[in-house]
Length: 332
Image 1: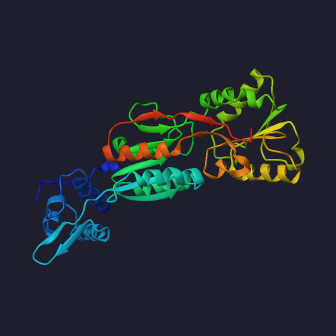
Image 2: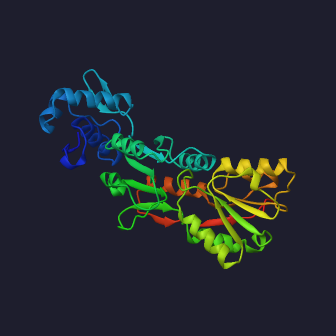
């Protein structure tokens, strides 16, 4: 068997069992241990590592359940397959997140397994899922919980194995990231669509910092755009059916609010793109066809998924703020 060291890092915050499982999977992922290589016996590994026999036995059983390790009479334990598990933690489930995940999965080898979880912007859930993942995965792809700072628990993951997605402020030069620009990109996209937006007397942003999973920077960006171009601006925490009238343009973040706007326009026989303008955030296949097409400001989530997969496969440092684009359709 190759000379593999199984040492406990006291700062890792892991149990001895987690540390041992992680050490073995790491050795396999890094090519130190290859398929068919023999592993130490329970007694030998217990003596060399200082772990109890019970801990070693449990670790081998966990790896057997994952089909990474097998055992056979007269042969003992040996590596059965490459071990490459990816931890992917997204904020919530939505159509564009599904695009991201499908692109990510499609661009990874079949031998890579991906555990997909969601934190739903709940700090306790976020912390618990990260805590439970430590030492169990080869790579980590995580959507941060807000856009203002990095949660300290992310520092417990090896920076070389962690990719931050979508939002956050990795200003220490160590973290890998694929982010959106939620301020300047929104301003530039709105400016690009100024000729369409000037048709309307006011632009109403349907956004609540408390209930809308989106960085608050968007409010200032839209407000400044309207002030510069002499368009009346309103920020509504919720969409008010009774307020909608001709000459308004609605900028909505949540798909639930988008549905309400469209249904209200239909009930009042307002024509999208003529009587009322509609602009949405984050593109999905459905928005390409509903109502003749919904105009959007969006990052390319398929591209984000593909680049995330490249990072996981190649383990090469990456730090990009992806382009956000305005896509004009019939609704504006």
